[in-house]
Length: 331
Image (tube, rainbow, N blue to C red; front, side, top):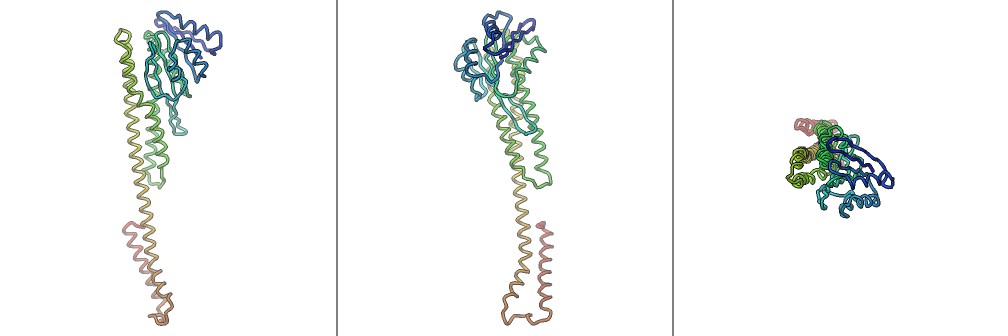
């Protein structure tokens, strides 16, 4: 566990990293319960056990349903209120270029009057970057716990945008390969990228209505009015990323259709070549079949030039067919 206590006006912070059983941790949680005006705390947990989360929930007075949501990393992005605590579920997301895959995690944020609790599942850690941004811009701390909520949302949405750019670059490379002259079927790669985009969409689209709900829940006080523009900026970035993800999905459908059309064209070309060669070989097969019937009385059987004429007939007819098929593009 990591606990940070911020002073809103000065921007100073005090960090305690410890286990929940440590004396330092108990003192930090005790201090959170008595924080006065001008101070707020931020507690950060990573993949906590049920016992650890229950103990911390008791110390902060969290609702049991909120604890259940934070424990199981299978939540859709959402916003809920438990008394004076607002709970927000987010999907963290990053792009692994080496595997051309979108990886996801999850984060729950509990924003109380004088504290923020973040519970992270997965490798991505938006809390670390959010803390760095708050340290670099201490003026944001005057908004209290909402400044942490904004910073985390901003980091997560920025990561969405970076991942969308990486997926777009991969799609551009895939388009170039699909429309190249090589006869390689990229259908499997396209379907794989479609699965990644669907996972991306499942993280981004449910979050889009959450931010307006957050803005509506901030109230109309002076503090809320000053922080609302920052949340609107995050919402605007999220809307752009959502539109980009939808575009990527549509482009992948188009690329898939183009790939399937090219595969169909290749199959038709192969069938025409096979049919052309079958027609060419049918002529000598027919002539040889006729003269292989061994009837006693057949024309040209006793003729000196019968064999050369039959061979010439087979070669000439085959040559004419080959030339015709070449002219029509079948060979």
